[in-house]
Length: 197
Image 1 (cartoon, rainbow, N blue to C red):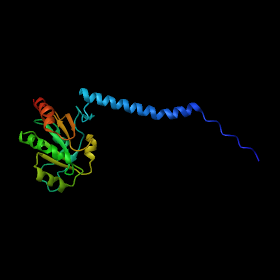
Image 2: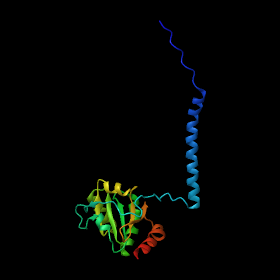
Image 3: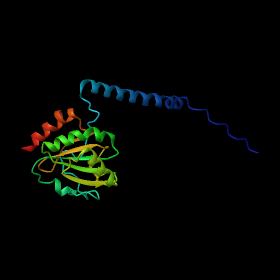
Image 4: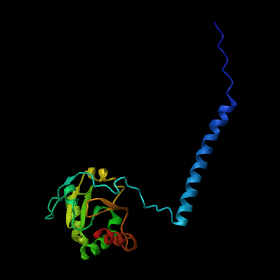
């Protein structure tokens, strides 16, 4: 019988390096968190300012039908080209609580004559239409994206999410989250005025 070779002694430097990896990761996370808090304090970091690769570009090509049972026109990328005035495209859903918070601002935009186009995201048509019957319908055009594929192409982060399209058909603004009165007054209305000319 041959004798088995003894196990090699563990390398102390390797053990120290492995122990140091969690400390290094925790330090990096702490530094990132500190930078975020500092940005919040100075106003240079906006947690809702999710960047979009589509800013300054035309929306991706799509064609969506109106929800079954709706008498409103459907929506396609062709409807967002060579516009008479800027439009707001809003992804919403009946199951979305922040969409209820946002809805009065969309109704206010509609009363001011701003065209708002709605896309019901991953929603049953009857539920989307019931939501609009209950809260009011601000949408000049309405489309159903039940599988959510168009939203993926747009880079939708979650609902509600809105995109301002200028008269040339380019995306000029993206807002991830509900449009509040403050957002409407401070961000969206000045952009609508700027891109109306």
